[in-house]
Length: 311
Image (cartoon, rainbow, N blue to C red; front, side, top):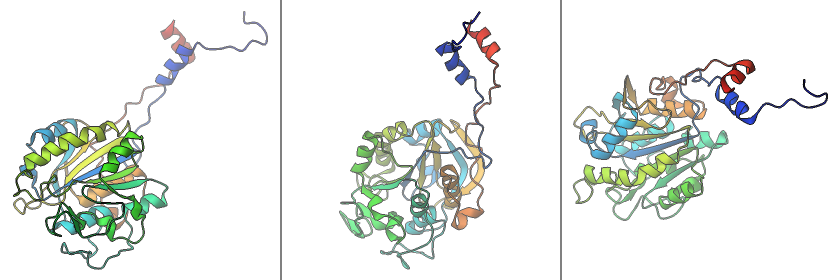
């Protein structure tokens, strides 16, 4: 008989077992899991066929999920980057610097994150300092290692430009366990294979750069993070079909979705995962929902059943 006044205590292991047996949450109604970290890596000017067989990219395909048909929205580069950032090309049709019509005040991922209390950063190779506004660094505005046409946030007036960081800050943030909720990684124009006619800047060299840089990023995602690897546009050979790949613990491995998608679909998936209101043309898109691992609900157990199991 239990003594009067003595608190009944369950053994600690039984409590731990009970927690493990609680029902696991299902996907939210919109079909995209709540994401703590979204990291977007943008490569350059190559079709799906040109990159899908590269060694490291192939390993990521085996780990992750992709829409079978994913398309950029236009040519050339700059309006595709703006589309992925702001849900619209905002009338930009060229790579001119600064982007015609800028600075823009349209809604965009940076402003949306700041308004929602989320953190964001863009990490760009060869950007010399936070918030630098040059059209190019380490070369010309067309083929310099850094070109502003690949950094759309620079052209918006309604966000904190101190979140535009040199690439070295990424390793520092990961080391300090401060990966932001949203991060964009912009390799330079050699490592993204933009300058692929230059020795050391081929798609195979770009694949090697990815293999050297992405594992640490993937490891930093945590249990509710996703890496999105995409190309801004194709090389004008394949109807603008590009590879868009999702990798992370919540993503089905080696999975191909039957969905047709664009950069606007990717943007809608990002905003839904981060709990942001969709904007621009992405608001009319349906996010990617079939690429996620659906948690299996486990029926709750009674204390009597738990004690029987643990006895």
